[in-house]
Length: 186
Image (cartoon, rainbow, N blue to C red; front, side, top):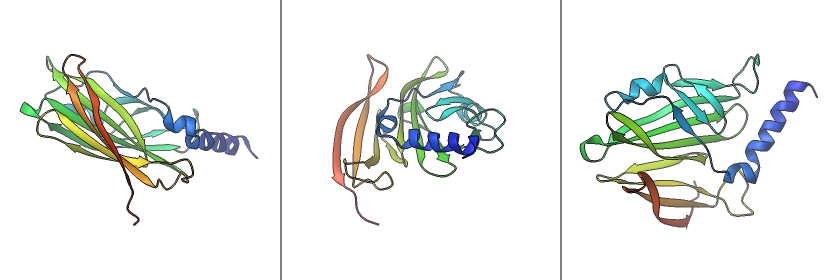
């Protein structure tokens, strides 16, 4: 095999390994996120993601496996930006990272406006996407795939719905309740 194919195969194996799937992501927006116009900051902002660092242009970006590689390994897209809650104090941001040959992640970020800047209050990523529902107060729910030990990577047999609420003392959204159900077959 040539060197590029070896690197691609290794990246796919790492991305699909159980340890990688369950690893805590250290994902974040890099820089200042103004409460007055977060969409502009996000569409041209930089992120540290589990799949690599990316700078968005027009809400889209590319992560290459190494410098000089001609194609994107991961195509990144800003999918959702939504202010919500009392006085639009909270901000939901969803980025999608789509691998060129297999797999995809949704990175979900929540922020709280403090002194004119949105401050990070939650960040997690979900293999093959997540459905996020925001509440009218200070809570939200995330529904995503839940894999049992014998499930193939492509197809989780269950889904988990997790409810989060803001812990004012910690300044973070924390898990309050979680339920797992059998996923409906398409």
